[in-house]
Length: 407
Image 1: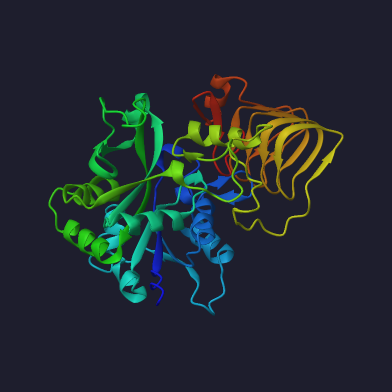
Image 2: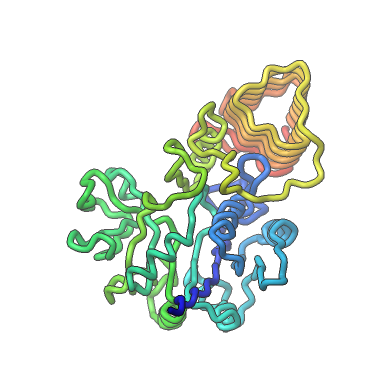
């Protein structure tokens, strides 16, 4: 008996996000290019999930301040072309007019030539700025089995948090079928099997390729559309009863544990970005970076090993090239090239090549690339002092932008 033909899959990573809520970290880079956990960029999580799922034809749609993102993708994400594998960064090109991308759906519409060239059966569409592990091949299998033209990945959230998400209302008689897509609802109905929870969209989708092409083409001419995947395209499939939901709880990633299974964070704010870092530095991390069965790939440059001399260091991620000489570093992330000399650093995120001088104190801070904290200086100790120096103070955090001087 002949085996069924394997479906051809193209992955599209939406990486054009401006990330206004992450300012000043996004003042000089796109949101997916923001560093995370020392050696990674946010986009590394999406790309690692895609390639670990077995999908090796990947396009990354970029737009906003994309230079560092394009450079990272081109330098890091190189695969053998012998079998047609690639990760290609594709900037906005105004192929269909003088507009840049008007939304995530318009980004795909303006890039339909990529689908036309590859001729896939299935298109996997994922965001580029979340921290998680996910096997998309399981979602694709569920999509095919459902018979739906569109499948939305969803994560269970407490019903009281529903007004923070796009919420998926399912049919009680057919719980895999989406009955309605609700944008930040005030009074949602809980799940049939768990009344205290709702299904929140993760911003990851699977489409039949021809259905996606038809949907974004129709949407392009819709007056009043925001040309958004979650706000316009998915609801259109829902109205035609062609949308299914994939419960993230059902995803089984190799190497995951009961503690970190199902972890997903939208790091779209400075507070959530900081909290996610604290998740990975905790003694029993809620998100485990050390899962070698499902690695997160990246490239961090030609740095030497980290070095600690006569220092108290605890609950700290030490990246290559870090030197801690004297002082104390606790519950913090040290990115490549960071140098701390006889200082106190607590509950902080120090990005590439940050310098902290003798006797300085840094608490609950995010210091972007190349920031220099002089000897005896104080950061995160007095909000008024931090504001006077031009730092951002928000949610109990002090944030210094890239190359920002300590004045």
